[in-house]
Amino acid sequence: MGMVDIDEIYDAAFDRERFEPLLRKILTAMGAQAGFLAWVDMKRQARFEVQFGNDPAYLQSYAETYAQHDILQPTLQAAPEGVVMHAFEVLQSPEVRESRFYREWLAPQGVVDNLAVNLIKREQMFAPMAILRTGDAPPFNAEDVARLESIVPHLKRAVHVQSRLVHQANLVGGYQRITSGARNGLVLLDDKLRVLDVDRATQRLTGLQAEQVLGGSAFEKALLSTVRDAAPVAVDVTPQDEESLTLLCVAQPLERDGFGDFAGGSGVVAHAIHVLRVDQPATIAFASMADRYGLTPTEVRVMADAFAHADLTELGDRLGMARATARTHLHRIYDKTGVQGFAGLALLAHRFAVPIA
Image 1 (tube, rainbow, N blue to C red):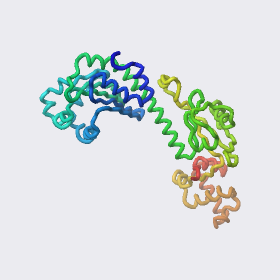
Image 2: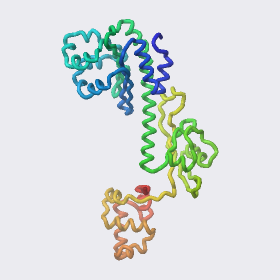
Image 3: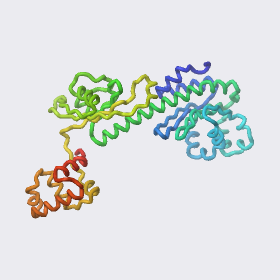
Image 4: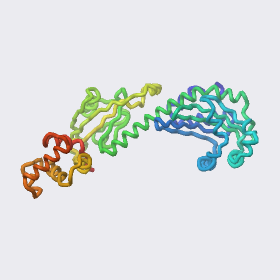
């Protein structure tokens, strides 16, 4: 190819750390002093940027001040996807030379020429790339344009692949944040039932490690069972120097993007398994129930006492009211929540249970 090897482009597609060295190699081969490659994938909430040779102060001033004065931006944005734009002739025009953007931002940096291309130009997804010559360097010629055009299709594919990997990382991060907030454990498996990630609490309780394939321990067999049968599985574990406790494993299959298989099937989350401690104390979000069903403060007190003592006969005595009054409050709660008796109310309240920190 004369500039970069195709394999280097696709190596970067699966390893974002390789994009910067790839960009540097392209710049060197093109005789350029600076450049950047970026994308924003709004649909998948993924973004990434690599740059080399640009003055950080000028990058900041562009974002803060000069982006709104960029006289070249409309032309570059209007260019079709994959078409390399050659800016040298445009930079010679009086209109550009007299603009604030040229005088205060381009000229002080000594920008001679710019090859720019919209690698991807879709609804909610953009991937611009720019290669600049500065100082005493000559402008790019037709051969330079052709050399860049020869790798544009491969760069486009690399951006697509990396965007999906970034999306996958976002999913993992999202599940980890959900786990942290809910105080439940989480195990992530790929389609070969290899452990991609396990939260620290579950790791401590079970000894499960990332990168291992599920094997013979009781906990690992429970994970295999919940994935296979799509049903919750309870398992007893005994952490080191602790008493035995029960964990409930609940598997959640995840949608897969077949495009991710370009990575050889590695690192793609296929199953999320929530791990709940059965012995963990919980409480009922009574205030939320009251807001949802229009319960009065007295009705909430009656309901909370009934759940706390699992007894209805002495309910009125404990609350300092007549037993008939307590029963009246209970039946009003049943009517408002639409349940049949105390058993139905208990089942409803279970949905409002939250762990105690």
